[in-house]
Image 1: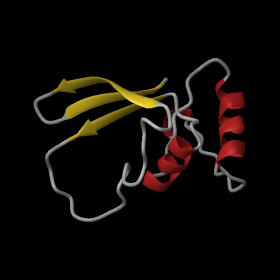
Image 2 (image 1 turned 180 degrees about the vertical axis):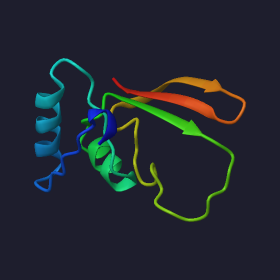
Image 3 (image 1 turned 90 degrees about the horizontal axis):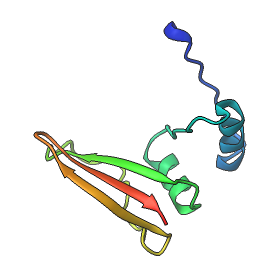
Image 4 (image 1 turned 45 degrees about the vertical axis):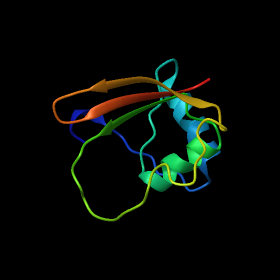
Length: 96
């Protein structure tokens, strides 16, 4: 891709994907992409250290619900910051 971005698709599961991402990142942060189902798997497995959510009051219709059925406090997560902006509220959620 332009700028040197490379994507690797892993089908062996989230743990293998995370191992490969950490190896590739070295000392840098690893970010998770792939949609709601993927992020939910990592949250349930307690493999996410920090989440930044931008919540905007725009209704987009139906779709997958990111936090439905997840008990984040029971999984060891807590909201550490909420910052209102002009078009969204930004929440920081961290694993304790």
